[in-house]
Image 1 (spheres, rainbow, N blue to C red):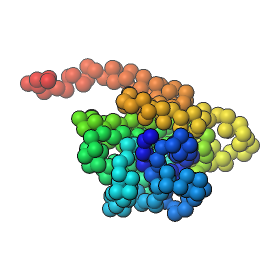
Image 2 (image 1 turned 45 degrees about the vertical axis):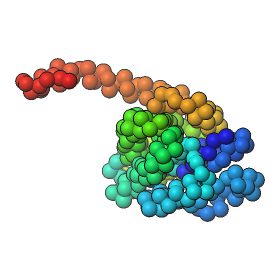
Image 3 (image 1 turned 90 degrees about the vertical axis):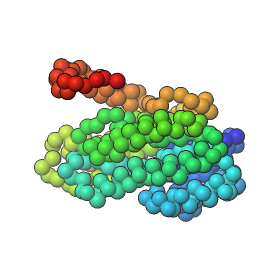
Image 4 (image 1 turned 120 degrees about the vertical axis):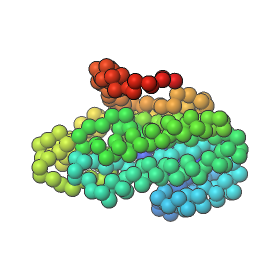
Length: 288
């Protein structure tokens, strides 16, 4: 039996992980932004489910909730940082406040929670952090710039953290799902409507995500989303059970294809600039 702490526990992917864990007898500390959101599970599983509201944007509140969870539960084995949301539209259309808000949840909220956990993990001599990122953390496209930026930042921060905390027997896994059939996209936020982008790649993709394209068939749209949320939830639980593994865990054939294409294109572009890169070294540079 393990004890998990899960943020954004009512999210489509996380909610399935929570249910799977409770069914098999694990303990779950679940945080949400709305009290009573897990009332049905609390009724069914009683003390096996510990729940709290938590403001990810308030480091003090995060510290207090995490401290209370460790006090009540004694030990926690796994932190699953799931809370996040999408924002779509041309970069120009997304306001400074919207940009601040999505980073506050997707990046700073995850970091606030991880920072709160690490002293406890060090003290108990072990721990696992599972950070939900996205395939958008490895590539971007028109209408995805700000969301991708938040996930790129998540990838960088948790890649460094994985190296830093490994000596403490704390393992980090960054999960990169592709599209998931949970309605995540249409529940996201959008930038301002800007007629200048109408008919462009950014404008068309934004309209498609909104479901604002005339004649759009919802059932057909669903079939164009690769990810089965239950299969993804099961894969995350298996990875934790197995223990250590690759830093990044890619879920979905669409994620594999997009990430592979992005990395290949970036590497090809880099190789074309090798001579330029070397030509700008200082004459007395000594490579380590």
